[in-house]
Length: 181
Image (cartoon, rainbow, N blue to C red; front, side, top):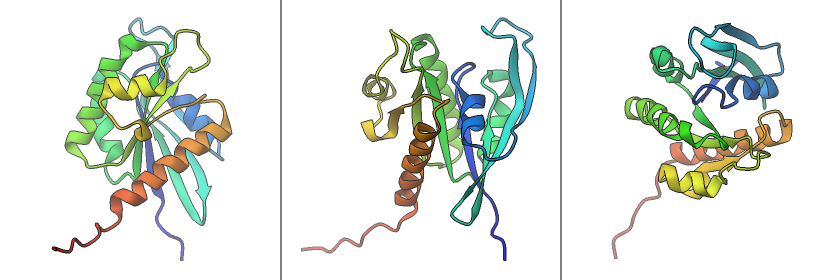
């Protein structure tokens, strides 16, 4: 019997590396729903529905969904996160002007759906990129929920995925029973 696929959502502002991370993790050709940008977003094409790839992981298929980064597609964030095993929110470490938008995306999703998440800080190779620890402070998150990565590096992408899966397992584990003294 084949088990139902698991779902991982990758979200964040435009240009944070969502499509790249889906492409890096996917073991199948990625289906991308890109269109020419209708406004100046710093690149010619942008995701308008979602990117989709798959990863076979320990007998399970993990479906990878990259969300669009623009607010006008925010309805897709909630649709894609429904039933998700976890969320990776990407922010470009060298674009602190996008951090508020990233935090708004995170709050939009997590206020509607209780999904375990990590923040991935991309573009760590850039000279003025914020360190993951500084991004954790900005987002008011524990340092373990924020990690730096190169979205094109398969090892770093898999490490981030493993970190999220560990977090997801801990989130779904029953709480230990408290004994009163």
